[in-house]
Length: 283
Image (tube, rainbow, N blue to C red; front, side, top):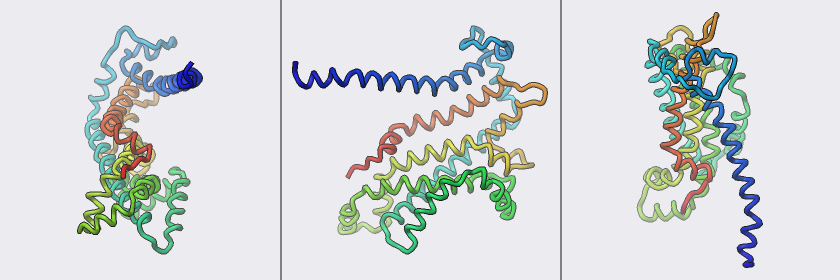
């Protein structure tokens, strides 16, 4: 038997085990999503039934109809889209400039600044909610979308800067020197050469920023107190939580609608996301 064929036969059981494990993990992750979508299409009688069945023979759109009949649902959706889009764009641009600065330049307290980024990642959001509430109150940002945008930008930046440092460092300095020799200014090199090379990393950090902002409930509940027109989509779920009996069909339908933009965003950036998570930058 050829040595190569023998090595393939030896490694095949391990590969099958790895693929089986990956399928089990994927099934475990997909099961809650499947149950959410299934419950959204189930009629009220099947949802309230004591016999939980992983199928339905009478799918219904009543739950989705109740969701879209909510008067403020469209406004909540647009608010969430605006907040998430602003956070993604602003945090990506700021993180790109900051990562370039801490990687390409040597300045005082540079190491201290990087350590502070790590420390900021370790602080739980719940511990800072009350201080942020008073800060937003003093700046007059309560009951505005700015009270949601600014904290999420601040919490997204440490992770984004740390991740983008690797991409900026992977770009050879010789490439920068060659651009200067050819007459390119620092600004031109930054946006026309360096930015496209680190774009996969920006996509990866943008996914993190988008998901955390889109699904945010804590800040939306804490900072939007009286003006419900400034609320975001997670707040729409509260309409279906009632003192006597929760509308689980409406909750699952609203959750399904909330998940669709995240899936669309992920599909649009998935190719860049793979290369971004791999940290590969071509010279």
